[in-house]
Length: 285
Length: 279
Image (cartoon, rainbow over all chains, first blue to last red; front, side, top):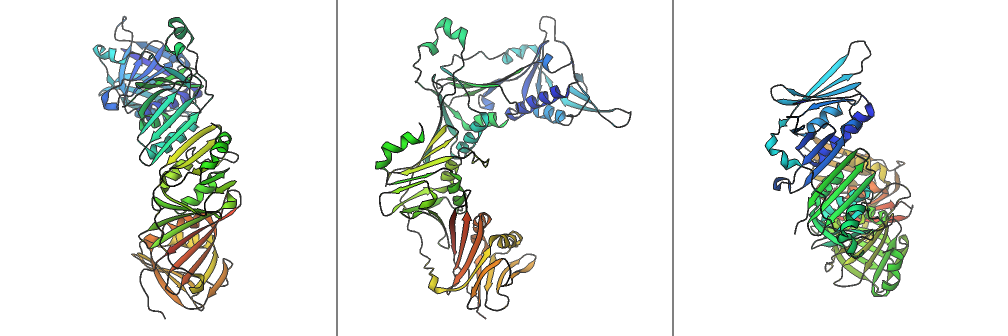
């Protein structure tokens, strides 16, 4: 099992740091899967974390100038590590002006991701800073827990309004209630609703647009084809989970979408060129 | 659901409709009196009065005149109800209460009458939020019987000078003592805290003193915990009038200028803590 990577470009480094910081806001620990082409940050929906799951996919070529890895075996050419994204983020944040950053899987007292950075100096002597971030190696037999979640058979898919607007509204609603109902239809309308003994609040968004999920929808004629465009699909979710997702946003996505499986799950997707982040919030009764 | 289409048809069934182009003009002034959840709203053709009370010792009133609103329609001589102020403020700031110039939240506030919720329609950047805040039976606000004919001492100060004093006040003191007198020390704020006593004096001919009309030396103490909420009003205001009546009751009137330069008033009444022998 071997892994080493090198980032030379400062923009790539900043971007990588932002992605990891975003993830650190979403979860305390997650699984980092390394494959020859990609890095995946995975959180599988366990009861302990409120059933929320996350899948973040990065293409290594977009971040790393050098990238070598050797998985546990040639057939299973992958490495699975449990990491604390907060630790990675903190280490990376101190290296923002580094000339080069190397990331390497090492065996010290325990398995570590060693981040070594060459910092600029005025003199001719190089300064090298090394962070050892402890990780846990996940044995092969547990890998199947960290497979890419299948696209849920959603009832409605819709583009999200600007995340900042959404965040402001969700923050206020959080002050008023613990649960929020998200509903959307195929006419580009989305509503956020809360209701308590004291107050009921509904925010109406319109003209958001519905993403074309061309192939699948047209082939099987799926539910989205036969669905009344005005008909709302809804899910009641824990407001804190949604707030957490909106709070952590450091990646300015080019596309933000939301899929709703009626009374089952809210599936949020952020796309930003080379990065995709998916977040699943289960519905509560 | 644009605001304009909402307004026409429903207008007749509401006893009170008030609209603002900038919801901050309401939320800011309400912040100045937010120290308890319950707020009593009373509307008359002159405008809106919002009252918050604490322990029958402190009362704060915010007055928003009808002219401040772009539309203010009332079908009765007076309309009253009680709502949770914290909830109302969260609703008014649902879009984040942006302070960016050019971005403002439009508000339309409607009330159908006894037993109905207070309905807010808020719009910013094409997004509409509808809030229905449950109302309660309005309580009768305490009448402090503070009447201008019984006022013994009165000063009007620029808020700036009082802000400075309040920010330096020793909050470990249980009371704030206010001395007003036609002779020395004219206008004095005193605290008695852990680290000693402190006096803050204003000369009567200071630039900060816009009016000085004291007829009798009067020293009264007010609970610091009761006066503390009034600093929110002070922070927003440009002028403040400090008055005491013959019973030692304190009235603080704040003149608040909103985003559009219009003037509103906030008033605090406070009971004295105990009688101090007059000199």
